[in-house]
Image (tube, rainbow, N blue to C red):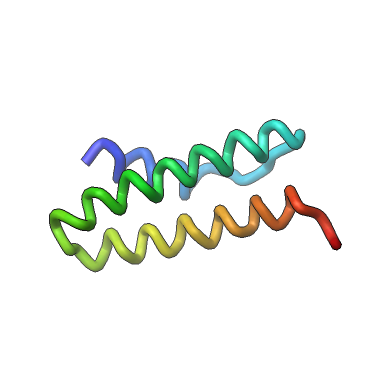
Length: 71
């Protein structure tokens, strides 16, 4: 459950990334957390884990949208 705790901590962290490298690092971190939570979800089938993955995916999309800019 260490992965789930890290994911919850990331979700509650302030999302202010000053530089592009900070955003890239955060996007990679959240992607790894989503994959880790997914592995736990496959074993336990807990709906709360699915909800957590959905919330993390929203955060990841916001970060990636900011990385890509307005095109």
